[in-house]
Length: 587
View (spheres, one colour):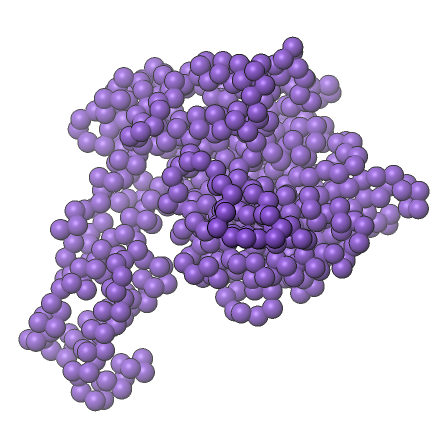
């Protein structure tokens, strides 16, 4: 992928703000107007294409609830639906092909990264200065954009528009976010050094280290990750229930996170959706949700079952609104019991009170897998020994990664078994996609997940299998019947549907690529010697169509395949009558 190619929301042209649009849709300033309420004060670039509905969503979501009591500076993330009719550029497809599933650009939603300031100001009628600076992007790079806001926002609130224009012009000079590439991104005299994650990266590897190859002034500020949150800080009050939260996220269950501030709610929701990495969380999620959200009625109706969505809220009003939801996580301020953070308890949903609801996980859900007591003891001992939060998060992230990988491996093996052998791919007919159906024909033999007549021994024993080189999480011990029940529930979830569709697409493209390579190696000129003009023209048209499709989809093929087939097509056209050559060359 060319470093200058990347997700370009405004289209594939090379006009003004093209590079900027590969990172951000726009930057917005929202202020509080005594007559209008929250209002859009500034939009940059001025020609950013936001609909009125999108502007309204940004205005309502960029301010914390009055119940949050946020004074001073507050940072949080929100997510809102794009208006119908937007079209992403082809560069987005190229970026998504190389990016991990969880970091791919979405076609239907924007992320908003907000820096809100509320301080006393006697010069203002209301007595408070209230303003929010928001970066709107399709990219889920929460750590990167919040780091930029920490540099930009304090300066902006002092110098206003000229400062914002300067930073936007700097971003317009950045190279595109190319997966697998380490970039140096200048912002207001600082340089952020980041590595854009790629699908081919080793999962659970070491974070990026400072590059000593370049003599940059000033010295770059290293960001170990563009997106990875401090998992330990997010989960510290629910550590003993981590297994339950992982299962709820895996199954895409409807879940509400009630938190004291939008910072806590947004970080918790993002942590839950990323806890099943490398699987992509395919349900809807709103890190910060308010009663003014355009989907408020859709998500709070009581005439149908709650949708598969994770919501982060701060308004106590939602306690009553979401009383019919099956899973509610009520968070409070972190309290310590000696050296350890106090752990919330699991409570029955009937215990959820309209007023003065205590922190807890309100659900009747029963976990399929056992708790990992070894992990919990290790983390709690780390707190007592003052282990850095970064190290605690690394332990937590590694455990969740291995748990998810262990769970998904039987399905990965089954999908791999559907691929035909390379030697069975011939140039003379389109490959029959053996066994690839809308849903794989997985069967349960007793309590075992099977892809053929022989039961899988790891599943028969009740243990999740692990890939080579990975440590088996001790939490995966479970009764085989309960493990089978977890798979059954997963097969009905949006996360499984999204995973299967992605694998189906990857397999289809790999087969198409193999077919092109076999065609390239075949003696097609020899095949055409005894064929009629009609058959040769038909071959030319079919090959040209396959090439166009392959280039558009950036199919993984060996070097030189496209060029060789182009040369062969020109040779075939040159062997035809002059009138047919004219038609085919202009067609």
